[in-house]
View 1 (cartoon, rainbow, N blue to C red):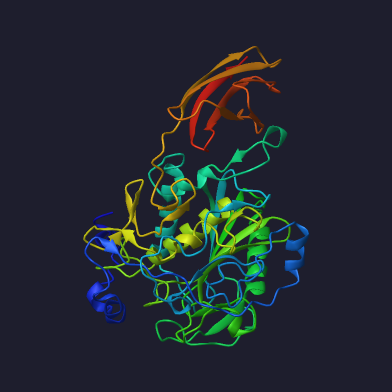
View 2: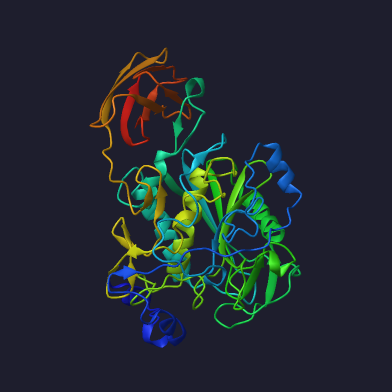
Length: 466
């Protein structure tokens, strides 16, 4: 990745970007990003008809947000809203934006994250191939690093729901897979929100509301035959100069306007219907509102997608821990990513840009995530992980017996997540399991061993069934 300029031929010289360079001058010491806290007081967003469905699901109420001097990272069914710099004010070295710890509200979490990327490129709008390639590379890097502890996604495994045996804890897994990516050329509908001047001084050419973005996601998912469920998440990427607003009222929240606004956002996540999870990530490479303030450049891969990747990480970790707004939040409604948005990072410089994470050998500038265990924002998991193995005794298709063993330096109780390789799975509190296969063959059996803190290890082996 150090020679990415030569590989892609799309060098975007830092010196040629005076607006952003002027923004960050003098704000960060070498090797450290200085972030700003999200604290301002937006008016409450009018609740949509879907919010009634949220209440019916038992979503927690966060009374007292409006006018509290705190950026509303949750507004109705809009979750994990990343504020632009125009929606927050400076605060001296905060440890969190909200009011942690995160507490559990009874709903589901994700136990794996299957990703689908939708790049909406109507006629007259454009994504460079490198933009799409960098985002695809990022998702694939996350997949290759699944179950490792070396990046921020590992911090999310400490959270759980109660869908285990007998209502026991069933932990989040850092298990990411990119299953599909598409460029859709669908024409834009007529805008339902007014055009506005964006963070870099350009004006939006069309402005779409969240309901219109939902319609496009639903259309693409149907056309592709993609699945929906709590293990799947759709990332909709919208192009440069396409404005995005929650609804027709500018004051309720729009993507990175140049004018000061207490409801300006960079990205958010939510859901459609019962369980179609999605995140909206607009073109974020605008000078100012949605970029980290760094010493050199916020683009360690020399591409506009670098800015979007920070937002992807924020929204994906929040979806893992709070997909429907009934999972893990603090008393203000902030999720794990909200607590740490735009706060200080330790960074390095790779000769192209500043980065805070190296994932599968590639560099990215990404925020940290909140850890209840560490009581702070963290870059990775530093806790000891369990180790383990399993044996298999295939007795033909009448049944196979599996026996796991596990050890851990800080836990003695374990749960065992089995995937038997034929589409069936089981979560057990016992290290022993049996399974009946419908036909003979060789199956890839996966076991994930969880300790009492959500630390986990994955063991995979082939099992021949006669």
